[in-house]
Amino acid sequence: MTAFARRARATAARMHPELSLVSFTLLSHLEYQGGCRATDLAAHYTLDKSTISRQVGALEKAGLVERRLAPTDHRVHVLHLTERGVDVLAQVGNARRVAFRERLTGWEGPDLARFAAYLLRYNEAAAADDGGPA
Image (cartoon, rainbow, N blue to C red; front, top):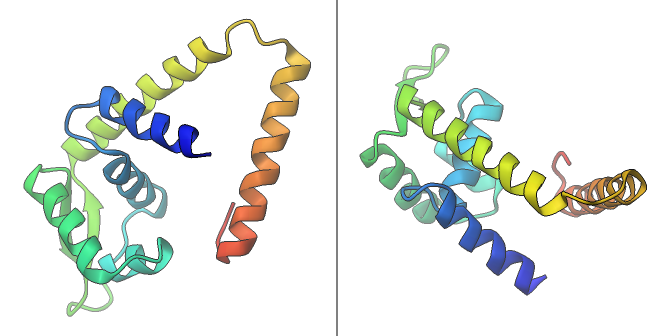
């Protein structure tokens, strides 16, 4: 698992020079949620608010994320991807798909099906431990 995590971080760095694995993860979550508060990110990833604040600050500085007032409560700021953030996330997503296709070239259908089933099973178990979606 350590080698897997190390490889994931190194791969993320190659996918886009501005995007760490953490940044990619946060941007992906914001895209999936259609925006959310920084406190929601902290709760979802069980991170300290100051850690999220630093990460979000860096994403804002890079022009990938912006804060908007919540439509129902103008005291609350909601984080959203900027147009540039959407573009960068799409570039990284495409690069990841290409990398996965290259790594899995030559795998037979049954091997791919088993691998996918094991990944789903692992993610469902992890989500159950975390109390979140798979």
